[in-house]
Amino acid sequence: MKIVITGGTGFIGRRLALKLLEKNDLDFGRGQGALDSLVAFDVGEPDPPFPDDPRLETVTGDVTDPDQLRALITPDTDAVFHLAAVVSAGAEADFDLGMRVNLGGTRTVLDVCRELGTNPRVVFASSVAVFGGLVPDVIQDDTHLNPQTSYGAQKAASELLINDYSRKGFVDGRALRLPTVVVRPGKPNKAASTFASSIIREPLQGDRVDCPVSEDQAMWLLSPRRVVDAFIRAAEMPADAWGPHRAVSIPGITHTVREMVDALTEVAGPSVSDRIDFKPDADIRAIVSGWPMKFAANRGRELGFQADGSMQEIIQAFIEDELGGNFAR
Image (cartoon, rainbow, N blue to C red; front, side, top):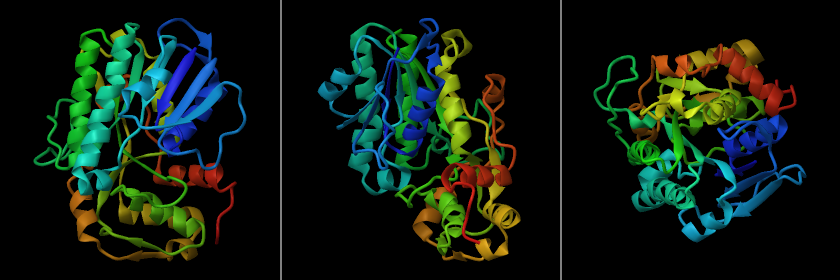
């Protein structure tokens, strides 16, 4: 069995690759089988490097280059996890780059898969940013897409491509509308939502951090553990479970920034949460305030996707997974 992950050396891609290698025995619609080959494709090298594994190959390149993708997505490819993207604030700041990578890259992945004639499974990382504008207090499964950012528009357009390429039998696609993923390790990136991880991660590591939005800003959240589980579950589900609607909102939990800080205090103590300073950033707040905050996600739950139990659970998982069970008190 062969798997390709675009964006495979990024935070989620890396965790997904390691989980797939650990799981090993998989079924992507062609029968249960062991994982023989996993290609992690990305614009940069993994940092830190992956553990040595003869089944794993890392390749650097451009997701918009069809020739590079053809060399990786070969007829023996069972599944492609398409995670490569320019993040939200980056896509807003550089419209052409966002369109080229987020929409053009998705089209290129789908076209290369189509050329194979093997109907491979394609699991796409979409986003709650496909919703926006005048929306109900709780987003329903049939709420229409109305993104208010370039990033959201690119993800929404990609969802439509996933649907149509699946309808035509070119791929067996599924798109996961992911909540904001917290807590991410490493350093802040250009994503508008990066602060949601920073206000937990930096204080736990002994550093002060600025929060660019107000305490009452609410967000729809999901942990890295649950995201990886969702990708694998989506890939292993049979096509008839999806029907003609190949996109689904993944269940999460809604918390305000104040509730997130209170959870950090409960888990790690006030000396840790006191390292957060509130310094408004109008650009970030304008982007984040346009995102919906609550989702019914009924179809996602019916398909077996799961949310985290609490913000405290998310924080504790980060301490265990990324900090070795210790933090700066």
